Length: 153
Image (cartoon, rainbow, N blue to C red; front, top):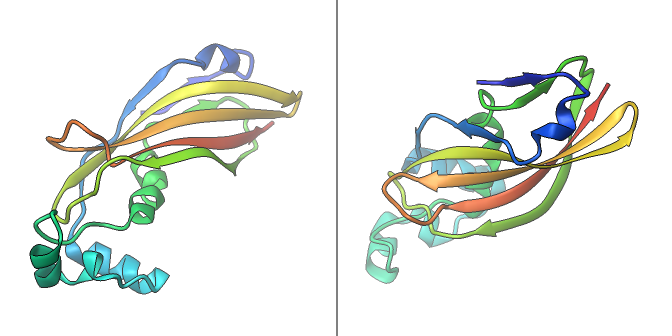
């Protein structure tokens, strides 16, 4: 669900939890497609038999960047929507930490919190959002990232 606020209310959103996405299963087909797209075919991602035999994970694990790349999809229904926004630009990241390997077959979801709101000009507001990609039934998340978005009015 989107949080709709006025431009003037935007600074008050710092510290606000926006919610969690639905769960999504990370299967081997998705991992293989990502390996093909990025040309990263390391055995821990694509060779289930070898990964079972040679790693402590019991099978393949997803690429960390696959988890990161799914954030836009996971967060499309739990976003901040300031009224009067002309467009939102991906401004980068301040921090990304891969906390736990994401095993094939696991389910993930994203949890969002508005961390900071900085007015750059009357027409530009920078919003830092903390995104935690949680793994179902796992105490540690797959990743925690601080994403930056520039809202243009």
